[in-house]
Image (cartoon, rainbow, N blue to C red; front, side):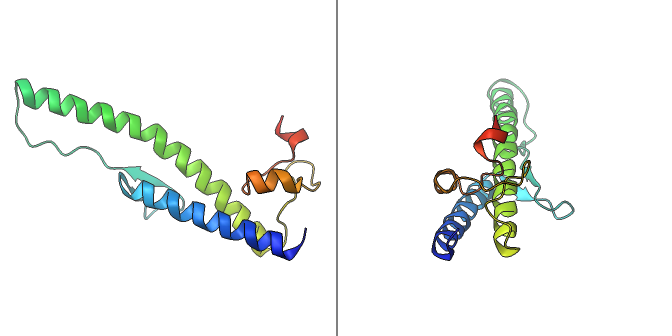
Length: 122
């Protein structure tokens, strides 16, 4: 793979990483004890009970539950991006993580963080 394409894909990966991290920051904090892990912010209840306060609290808990799955998906994408950036750094980028063959350049252009060739992805 030529160096110009690798640089273009690296730039694309870094931009995507930045965008995902910025999104995560809106509802989660980095876990200082576990690399690559984010923790969704749990709702802060104001201590009121009854009617509208309970409905509000229930809505916040429901939203928290929804954020957990979004957080997990974003963490997985970040993991793949970080792996791809590390592989670029170590000159191992573009190799299938299963069979070791080259991943098609067109596949990498569409998904620069792809870890497997099309055959192994299936």
